[in-house]
Image (cartoon, rainbow, N blue to C red):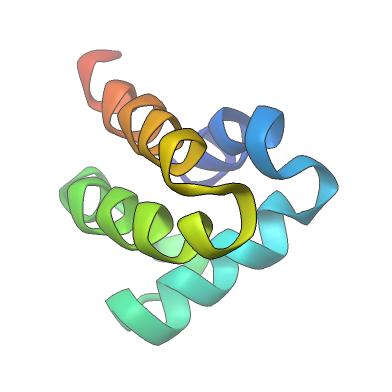
Length: 75
């Protein structure tokens, strides 16, 4: 699941996606990236928007959140 989130964030954060998302998982969700599950996606998306807004702006961070949440619609 984690690799899918990294891929979804690449258009917004580029090569920094992995490090950014890893920090969100560890510090906000208290879960190791390799253990990220579908049940964690909504909360991860929320934190990615909050923290991402500081880096890429509020509008782009909101788009990124939607892309992360969109992963739940995939099987």
